[in-house]
Structures are given as structure tokens and as C-alpha cells.
Image (cartoon, rainbow, N blue to C red; front, top):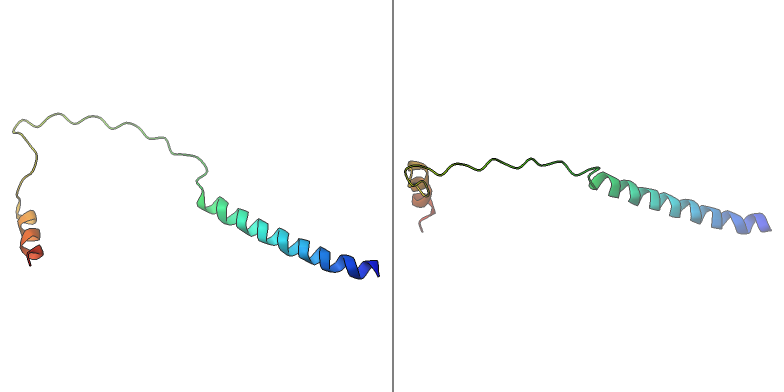
Length: 68
């Protein structure tokens, strides 16, 4: 009689352990192992002609297609 009582409990523990292992495997697959080291980018020198916004043919084409 004690064998019958332990069997369902053993199955429950087996399924609970399987679910836990699956959840841990999914979490391990999503989380990165180590954070990549980022090197700081060199600062760009200031443009000589002012730089900034430029209305190019590509930008003008976008404005033409975006117009309602």
C-alpha cells in the first residue's frame, strides 16, 4: 500500500522537476552569458562647412512620397 502512495508523489515530483528544468533552460537561452565590452567611439571632429542638415535628393524624394 505504501508503494501506491509513493508512485503518484514520485510522478508529481518528476513532472515538477521537468518543468523547472525547462524554465531554467529557457531563461539561460535568453540571458546573455557575459556583457560584451564596448569600446568608446572616437569623437568626430567638427565639420568645416557647418555640417548639420542637408536637403539631398534622397531626402527630397522622401518628402515627396510622404506628402498627403
